Image (tube, rainbow, N blue to C red; front, side, top):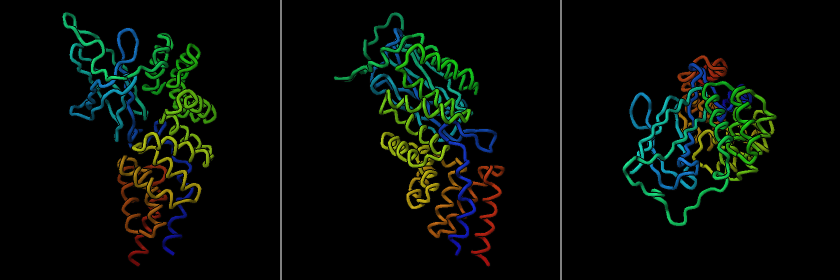
Amino acid sequence: MLRLSLALPLLLTFLTVPSLLHGQRSGMGGRVSGGVIDVQVRYANGKPGPRGIHLRLEAAEGGPAGDCETVDGGKCQFNLSSSGVYMVRMSERGFKEVIVRVELIGMSRGYATLELKPIPGEAPPETPKQASGDTVSLLDLSIPENARQEFEKGQSALKEIKLDDGIAHLRKAITLYNAFPQAYALLGTAYLGQKDWKNAEVALRKANELDPKFSDAYLELGAVLNQTKEYSQAEAALLKGLELKPEAAGGHYELAKTYWALGRWQDAVPHAHKAVAGMPDLAPAHALLGNVMLRESDAQGALREYQEYLRLDPNGSMAPGVRQMIEKIQKALHP
């Protein structure tokens, strides 16, 4: 009876856990456990940069935090397991070194735009590291500068947790240029922060309508649909997002929550493990993994995960229930 009697008390607690994907705040000073930094490299005339530009991410307190190279449209992305202040550095031959500070605190997503500025007296290649057959996104080229500026103002406001200001700028960006998937996606994230599920869903669906390969918009949409208990739709959105971006630990966490809510705990197992592996300091993921381990009759494993939850977030919303579960397991193991 250990498996059933212990797993049920926490069944409903995960339905009220805030979404990681829209800037979840843990019980540790409101710190986001992980996140993503989207980078856009562009030329001085506003055109997207080429493929193959190397970018380095450094923690503000010192030390490397990651590397990436731009793909088509001058874009790349850093996936992080912990929040903090980061510096995105671009050092390209023939161009000035550019460093952009990104504060990934209180939000799960950050943005950095870096401009390729030629060094006077040097002759940089017109298209550095341009691969043969590389193409520039027509969508990126068509974004008017005034819409781009409003987008950047919006993302800056969201970094400072000024949701109303961010929404105002993003809505203006969309008014200036309606086919702007990044603006719709960020607008959806802002509405998520306000728990305005309806508007968040509308914005995120529009982002994917404009860009069917926008993985993060699918993952954010899944988080919204989890909140509104539209679990079948959440599953479809999250599976699509993870198909495009299989390494997204936040997406695995959301999908594990979806399956748990649907009573399909066997389906939740691999995603709960991937969530913990990708975001080991996300306390709720450990509690969820503990629940599915109990369903697998792995009491020792569940005990370990519950204890890790309390270590990470001793005053969290699930802490009282987790302590009760630990006490029950210990009594069952050592009667």
